[in-house]
Length: 166
Image (cartoon, rainbow, N blue to C red; front, side, top):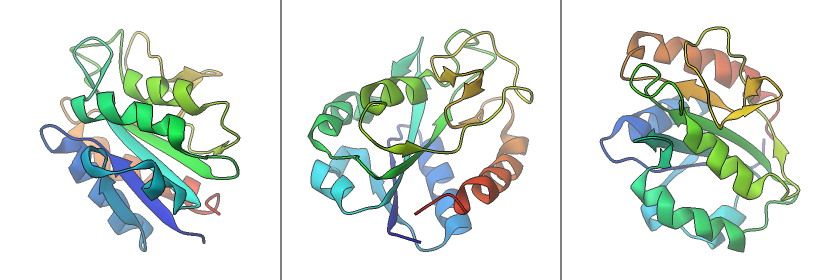
């Protein structure tokens, strides 16, 4: 497997916690908080996992608001990319995990290979900008209402993506 890194933004710590749970499941993975990461950091990896939470009504987490423009300076061609997103499906059912979709819109035509799409059957929500072809573009996590499902969802997702990483 090529070099893999997780890039996340976290305000209250939930996204950071999930990022490190993923690191434990994946093994040899570097982890970066986007508040101090650069386009050069992104360039050092074959596999990139982006983690973001959705705030308010479909907004990016504050560190991602700045970092999303850094994505313009990165070359994703030939890289493998996966997403995980945190959201509150009860409080914001119309914008559940929108942050994944916002990030994907920014880089969807970058020449990257995207993996880790997840079906919607196990989730209760109304709409999401992270839906592509009837699936979430990455792994949705709802720590506010379904924290008891997080570890199982992570384990299943990692089992799915691990063989697809370069």
